[in-house]
Image 1: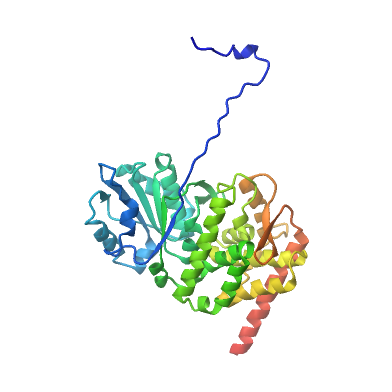
Image 2: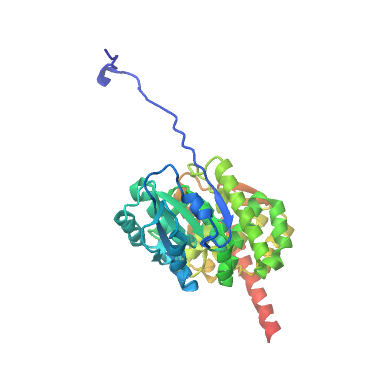
Length: 409
């Protein structure tokens, strides 16, 4: 006969059942070129399951910008899968809108979940997203919430997504005027970085990912920052070997943090890899997302670096090195949105501090610099000093613009 606890009404102490739950994830980023060439077996090998009696089903979503740049892409994808036994492409690749607009409505998530349902994509099937970071975020959310999570493979196609967003464990969409308000943590089954996609990018999209590389170098790896300084000219000229090296090291540092940082799903109050992002996210929103993420991150980093200098945390020559590197890489260090004001005259970008705190709850926690390669968490911001940093960034940009105009006159 089972020993049963007495009726709870008669218990004068707390009763608790507690178990430790541990879930292990394998997170892998694979590097290749021409992933859909018939001779390239990488994707096939990732998908193939010799122990499965039924064919592995695959649903593919492609960024519309990529389809415009590569009109034969959808046909090439279908041809790639055609000879494979045991792997079934359930329909021609679905074309979805790319860019930040795709994250501004849950409708787009439903558009992907509908074919997941229609083609019976189950938890042993795969949803593959091919495109920039915004598309990967949206499709990742659809995959993570269908059947409480189907297997998801990312094939990022921009410098930014290959170096940063595509190799992370986050996905989501914007809502209620806030970036990434709706989302999940869901490590992808695999990430495949194909260097060939970089060749077809606009200069703006090639450059965008550099900001995240500078970010992670500043807070994690001084030697990487020095390498970026040494390679600045090659990167500004978009030389492929320099870009590939940047992407590899940036992705490696991000994955090291996810695997070894102790808080991959951000249960605490800090987002250490989001250095400069409290302002960047707000600037993107204020610009109606005309300002690209990497461009906003560059401005946000420079703002926080100047502020770190004003607070005596880093010497002035470190501040100048960071600003100079961004300029050499081709970034504008200012946008008008930085000085947008509300009806009471306050700077709207500063609302990003509260939104940053609210995103995780708890106390405000942002990352600043104690030196090149040394990030530090702080819990309060001196608003007059931050405003001073904003003015200094504007003054530097205006001075630089005036010199360019004089030189061209």
